[in-house]
Length: 126
Image 1 (cartoon, helix red, strand yellow):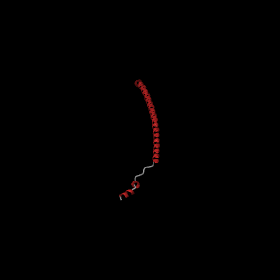
Image 2 (image 1 turned 30 degrees about the horizontal axis):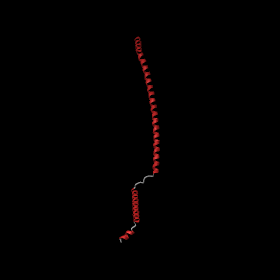
Image 3 (image 1 turned 60 degrees about the vertical axis):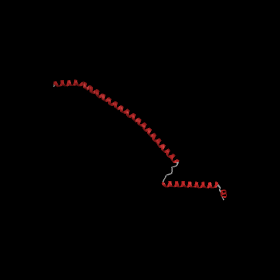
Image 4 (image 1 turned 60 degrees about the horizontal axis):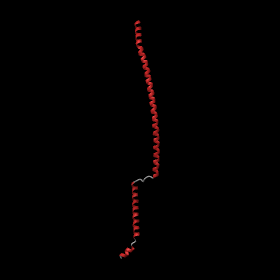
């Protein structure tokens, strides 16, 4: 009887059926896992095309901002040199005016003793 059972045994067919059942079970478990994750609200990953497009847009915005920043710094440097030049010109004008006033006052102070003496002489004559 044992010999009859051994001769009816066909190992490749039974192994194939067990492998098919195992593959089906794994596929079913993965499908259930995917369904559960969708029910929980796990969002699927965005397609690569959208990511590449958003990266291109961000790079374009960054380049625009960098260009704007470089233009702004150049304008600030030009404004700085103009402001410094105007300040030194204004300072030179102020110091020139102060020197003119000093010269006038020095002349008036030098003439003052002679005017005082002249006024005193005129006051004695009265």
